Length: 187
Image (cartoon, rainbow, N blue to C red; front, side, top):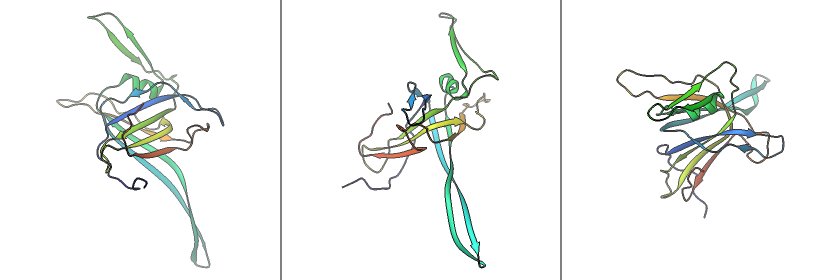
């Protein structure tokens, strides 16, 4: 008997992004190693449909809709140089020795914005011991990256992204929603 086709989705447990390395037409899509999104707080997926109506004889004759785009909105709790460097194509450098070590991310107007894959996991589904994953195969930042500092409070970070279909055949599509009977950690 298959899993039910519905489940609760309570809390986001983990999320990671993977810089896209190659996406050849009809070939194998490749990604760099996993980069954890530290302190993931939320992931919202929006599917936008464009609908068209065919009218004639003073009545609605037909209607069609197409999936126009998929967008993501991600919030996380910790400043993440490695995540931001993938999103914006920035360079991160480490320098110094203890007690004077330093990490610097240089943001320049010539940085090349990368495509990347996102995978997020919820471990509280209806199936005890199961989980739900959302995997978006080819994304690019599409709105401001929120960061900064806040008086007497924790600063939260976030961004929005647009998804597009891969050219390669190994990932395919824009997005997968996966419900696993037995939880599978993000690799």
